[in-house]
Image 1 (tube, each protein chain N blue to C red):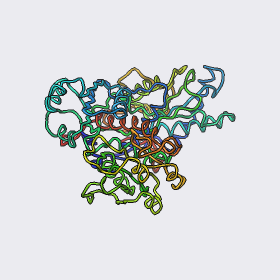
Image 2 (cartoon, chains in turn purple, orange):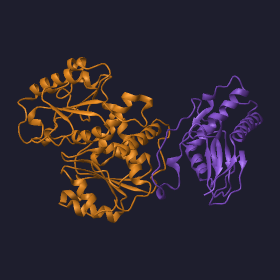
Image 3 (tube, rainbow over the protein chains, first blue to last red):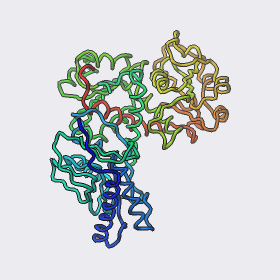
Image 4 (cartoon, chains in turn blue, purple):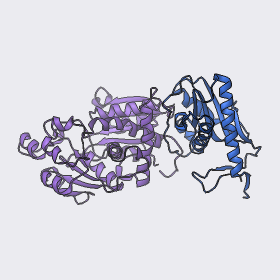
Length: 183
Length: 319
């Protein structure tokens, strides 16, 4: 099948930078302080990498913020609604930053927003860790076809797709290039 | 992953490491305030215990409950088994009730295997100890405990290559020893059995382990990383295997002196229940190098990982 690159490495960097600043801006409006009470939870695998990149940009803009204080990862495998009908998935670690998530503004970070079922599972998982003040969602690509009433607050790029297409997000931490490819 | 867990020998190296890695994730859940996952909601798991057990039964029950499965506990005492009901009829009753998985502990070697291959029951069978044959979840939790002690936070993805494990004592009656030598050799560890000749099987050639008949000599020459003491299973002994308990404790028991002879990083394990003062003395059992309680804690994570692996996800039709 033919592959088409829709976001280049530079496009991804720009999107990540913009999302980071939007998060800061929204958080300032909400609690009068850029990175205060902010937690970024990446959803494995590539959401974790994106969350790390966003945290770096935030740390650059707010010098007294350390990326590791904001960052966590949330494995949602055990909360999926399709466990019975798919091959067993490996479980990875969940790490919550030491400040916890109670009364914090939690931003979930994922690479592609599609049916919304992953995010539903993530919301269930969050419930077991505490009660955030607000939960927001940041994604690199929103490809449509939602099956649940879920919407992203920060979007890198809206990509209208057909259901048959595959969106492949490649980040150089795990892949050999930085690109979003549509197949 | 296959449908049943009957023997530690059925696991490939990749499958074994995968279970250990999943258990790593599960152990995080066990550190949380809300120790509950919705993963096995709506599944029914029966704990079928024909033989007494504290640790294994409680551990399985906690694991099942933390994964939100419906749990039915069955012990032979107080059931129709004491009226003479056969294993077959008991199994078919469970099938009629609709059990998705059966965790079985039985005094007859091979009981789990019979249940898995008899067509009496369609669910997954997990062997929680059958006679003197196997106890695969114990071997998994032992491997997990060793890996955690040796590799710490770097554990995920790792095996036990080159780790020297000495398993000491009543090998003859020990399902723990049998399952451990299978799993540990799959994971690349080097297994040594140390026991008086009377407590080794007459033909030990099938074991993936080196045999020794002198504990102090073995500790001095092999310098093991892990020493696993086995319980002397008096309830299975129908002949005299050693002259007196005092002599056994002196020659084969692990005591403060032998603890001092180990290298600094070495750990002492025991599957429990311990006969304090017999195969292990109190100084060793309560020392920071003893992993007895860690093994119990890790048992819950391992059993959650096994239940998750067996009960979630599609299986290929051939198993």
